Image (cartoon, rainbow, N blue to C red; front, top):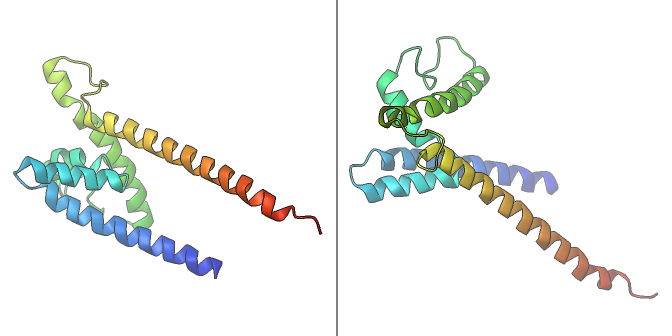
Length: 152
């Protein structure tokens, strides 16, 4: 039963994540700002904060070329593509995301950097989640302890 629950959780996570990416992809292409904001929120919910910048500034400009990490190379395995694409998109996103700051001659590593700010928010969210989950585990252990210590 334990493995079944594990695989149900993995399957649900993969399905929800991939579905969210498809919907968010369509939302960030909309002209209206509220659709773009909802797309960004959906990307944040699946921990993919770099996709917004990478997709619009890198992929659309260099699709099908060597400069686009999201384009698979001929004969490349799925695993090799996944690793190259993921890390390549993050690197290109940080590179292209700082270009407007260079034009304005401002600090690219401030809170106006979309990817940096959202990555820090995501880390804070995960830390908060871990702390609150850990606290709830401690509370459950302490609440269940008296039930287990009845004298026989």
